[in-house]
Amino acid sequence: MDIATPHHLDELLADGELLTVARVSTYLAAHRLATANWFGRTGRPERSAWIDRDGTGWRVWDTDERAGIMDFTIVRTESETEALQSFLRRAQHHLKQDGEAVRRNL
Image 1 (cartoon, helix red, strand yellow):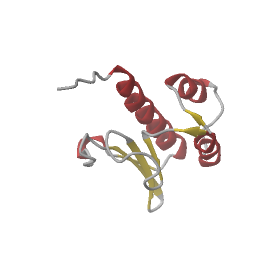
Image 2 (cartoon, one colour; image 1 turned 60 degrees about the vertical axis):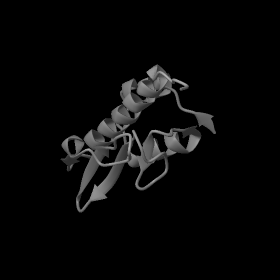
Image 3 (tube, rainbow, N blue to C red; image 1 turned 180 degrees about the vertical axis):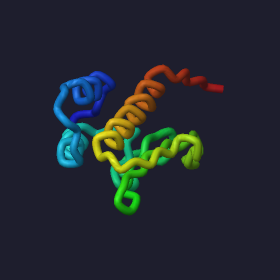
Image 4 (cartoon, rainbow, N blue to C red; image 1 turned 135 degrees about the vertical axis):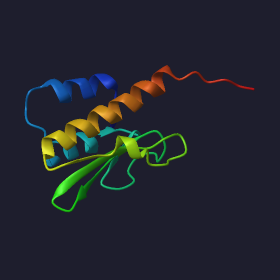
């Protein structure tokens, strides 16, 4: 299993093929993505993207540095493609933020 990079996600989001649960699931099985929680906790709980089914629709949200749900980030949609794009873009954003984070030893 490879570790996902922002470049991997750029390719997946830009390749023009419709995003489906099966396609994203295959991607996540091949690329470890700590910032993505796929239908439950599959990545880290803090500073990450989450996706789940919400009745007949989808729910996508982000968590903060204490793993609290950021209410203003919740998106509810009936569109599978829209939900998957939002989820992957959020996971990509958190991944990029990790790469830009400054670590300080006090």
